[in-house]
Image 1 (cartoon, rainbow, N blue to C red):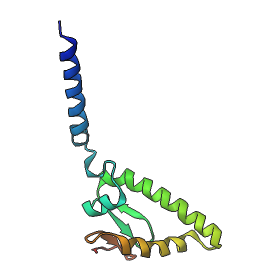
Image 2 (tube, rainbow, N blue to C red; image 1 turned 120 degrees about the vertical axis):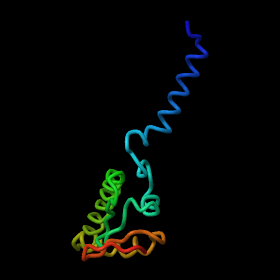
Image 3 (cartoon, rainbow, N blue to C red; image 1 turned 180 degrees about the horizontal axis):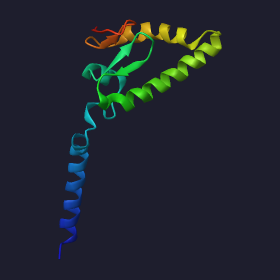
Image 4 (cartoon, rainbow, N blue to C red; image 1 turned 60 degrees about the vertical axis):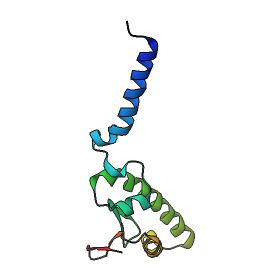
Amino acid sequence: MMSRRFFLTALAAGGLCATLLGPVLTGAGTAWAQTPEDLLRAGTAGERWDGFMEARDGSAAATVEAINDKRRNVYVRRAGEQGVPSEEVAKVYAQEIIAKAPSGSWIKRQDGSWVQK
């Protein structure tokens, strides 16, 4: 019969392996629990001219969607306060976001082309 100590050690080791290797084995990739800056530095996402972020790698899609949802809420709220379309507010924010993006970030222009900052 397996001792309790051996069982707990094996269970802990299995949990550690799952934690460390889970994202690799499941294909979660580099976007797992990252900030916008992390995504930009990794090149898995880029900033767009319209104030939203775009995934450049499938692993970043869910994170980028969550970031864009938060941004959209801010743009809509500010637009309501100022009585202007949210798209116009987003474009103003886009200039600031792009200016603050780390060097090497990917930026999508209005014509659809990508350039590195």
